[in-house]
Amino acid sequence: MSATEPVADNGVNVEALLEARAALTDAPEAADFVWRATTEWVRGTHTETTIDEYSGLGENHTHKSTFSYTADHPEVFASEDHGPTPVEFVLVGLATCLTAGVAAVAQNRNIQLNSVKASIEGDMNVLGILGGDPEVRNGFNDIRVHFDIDADASASDIEALVAQSQKRSAVFDVVTNPSNVSVSVN
Amino acid sequence: MSATEPVADNGVNVEALLEARAALTDAPEAADFVWRATTEWVRGTHTETTIDEYSGLGENHTHKSTFSYTADHPEVFASEDHGPTPVEFVLVGLATCLTAGVAAVAQNRNIQLNSVKASIEGDMNVLGILGGDPEVRNGFNDIRVHFDIDADASASDIEALVAQSQKRSAVFDVVTNPSNVSVSVN
Image (cartoon, rainbow over all chains, first blue to last red):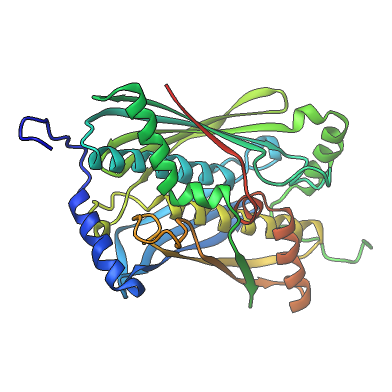
């Protein structure tokens, strides 16, 4: 970029990420991360989940804080609504992943963001989870994410930010493609 | 069941759920739910997400409380670790969905649960999201859930609880099968 171009500051340290990419390409085993959570049943559909540790770069790490999450089912499912449903936590993951990605891509493209808001909706027919109709899937039939973005860029550049964020999003991949899950019990 | 059998109390109102299933089978449009969340970008990869409303049974509903979630990236990604990563929220969704399902199935099978703990791990090679290796996917390569369950039941009956919970879990379906996601921008 020329010296006269403004330098965007979205708070993402792109230089460090590009250095990390180069370093991990040379030491690919360090790129293997393991993310963890522990869920304790309370009563009914009410659970408490804790997140504190993860692994990566060849060692264990502890988050700066221990994060705790309450999940439940709402009163329309004859539960007590102590927290959101599990599927709403998936929407949190998808919307936050795409939004963080927009910020990272904008920084890399020297586009100043002024505000970003993502509104996410997931359609689900609950006859699936209730076992009422074998033709109905348990999960989402359709998910829609709508971004409102104010940035110092053209509409087409903003669209390109969102497209690139999808391309590199971990949770977008998890939701749109199958992942292997193995479940064991003591 | 005979009058002499113990009656399990796991806090799940199975009668109400079976009634709901029957009612919704007769009025399937009421089974269409929409779950929602709204994410606001703060700075860098730090976002704040709010959950309060959802739709179902032909009308809009408000959760008993507004739920707010902070997400971020950790310091090893040159971020500030204000909250868990988006992918960890997906693990919260999966572990809590399967755990609530164990409770519901146990209630339906008259099995008293004493304690349930789910430990979940997701493997991810971050060269995917960093764009460092086109052969590496962005999402999880493998997810493992391990249950420790203390219940008044045989080991095989406990294994069957976990298997049935997987079969009816919304988030297990979302993670193991593809879902359609459309993304728009103003």
